[in-house]
Length: 220
Image 1 (cartoon, rainbow, N blue to C red):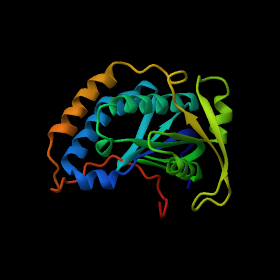
Image 2: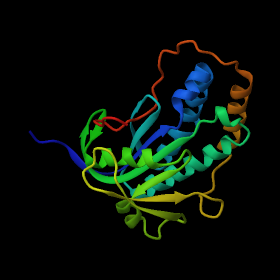
Image 3: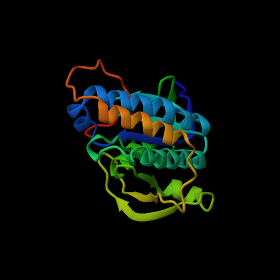
Image 4: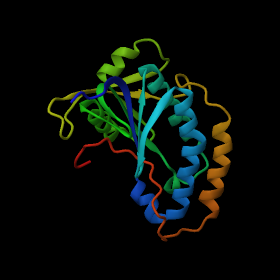
């Protein structure tokens, strides 16, 4: 049986501390996350010619035809998230961790599979809240094409991957991050309102799914 395969830049992301945020305020977290996805993440992915493969739980899996597009999109989302969180109390902030890898993937209508996808998910797990980790392959392909600086954190042993993965962190700062448009400020006002005015709630929400754990992966 012939399988559809292609080379893709893979971005895996999840919300840091999602269980804690939901435990403290299910409805508020749910609404703020929907707003972020609708007004920031989805438009940025489209702008950089990406495809959201799936949303489940507390993150997302996205594929790009270009490594440069994938890294630029991730950096702009993270910088905009930082701007949006400026006036949000730390215990209510929604922050993504992101990992980016390049790999040959098996393509199905609603999912992608392969070692490259699994590594992207492991890179995401190594990232700090608000941070981005990339593989050496991604770093080498970027070269001088983007104005970001990188921190080489060396080879890392990650769960269920047989070989060490050489990892770099992208440093996001005012000097190297691409300019983010006024969408961040508009969202900041909406998120501040929801974070400060909505009382905590523990009622069930019916499960809006936004994360992506790259499948199949065990034990993240």
